[in-house]
Length: 221
Image 1 (cartoon, one colour):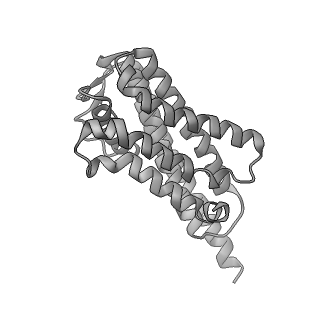
Image 2 (cartoon, one colour):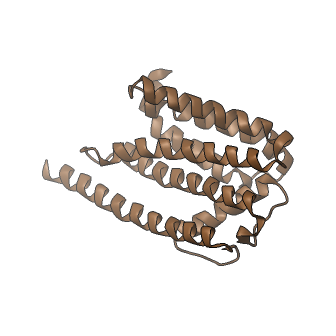
C-alpha cells in the first residue's frame, strides 16, 4: 500500500483535488453534499496526500496529519455550527493552511532537477488546483465575515457558497473574468488581484520549469 501511494502519489492527489472541487457537476443534492460527501472527499484527499510526504521527515508528516484530521473533522461538525461565524473562520483558515502546506511540497518537487515525465505533468496540475483550493477558502473567510464582500455570491448554503467561489477563483486564475460575481470590499478586491497575479506567475514559472526539464532530456540524447 505504501509503495502504491508513493508511486502514484501525484495521480491520486490530482484525482482527489478534481473530485473535491468539481463533484458539484454531478451531485445536485446539496444537503447530501455538505453532510456526507464533503467529509468523505476530505478523507480521500487526506489519503491521497500521504504519498507526497513519505520520507519527508517526522515533523512534516506530523503537521500534515494534524491538518488532515482537522479538515476531515470540521466538515462533520458543519451542520451544527454553520451559523457561527468563528467556526466558519476556523474551518477556512485550517483549509488554507492545509492546501498551502501541500502546495509548497509539490512546488519543491517541481523545481528539483529532473527529466520531464508523467509525475511532473501530474504534479504541475496538482499545484494549480491546490492554489485554487487555498484561494477559495481564503475568500470564504471574508465572505462569511462580511456577506457584502462579494456581489452575486450565493449564501443559501455553505455548499452553494463554495461552488460559487470555486467558479470565481477558477475564472480569476485563468484571467477569463466573466463579471457575474465581483469583489465588493477593498480586501476582496486586493485578494482577487493577488489571485490573478499569482496565477499568472505560477503559469510562467511552470512553463519555464517544464521547458528546462525538456531541454535537459533533449541534451542527453
